[in-house]
Amino acid sequence: MSKILIVEDNELNRDMLSRRLSRSGYDVVLAVEGQEGIAMAESEGPDLILMDLSLPVIDGWEATRQIKARTSTASIPVIALSAHALADDEDRARKVGCDDYDTKPIEMPRLLGKIEALLRRRPSL
Image (cartoon, rainbow, N blue to C red; front, side, top):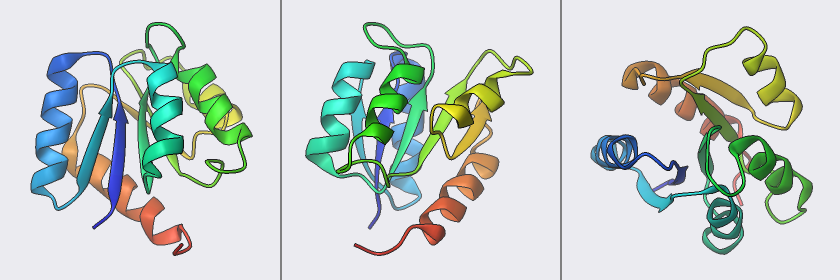
């Protein structure tokens, strides 16, 4: 069973995503802000991270940058999630190390497709 770390400060989004991903067969762990997300990427060793970009303390941009800069977590795929679908956000997300990008409100079939594609590409550990 693949483990997904959701880094999301909005309780409703966190709850919806975790329930739907659990029902889809994923093991889900949760972080509510960027610093916690960085620590959990290290301690939990998830197979994939869903990273909200607008987070308190350390935002998703910087959290992703730090996760991708660490040898121990650099290979974990990150999908950026943003409610602000600005034209340059996806490009900026990829520049900080995100492997994919999706907009809110979340369309689960589309997001699940992105998750499955990234998990298929990740080498088995």
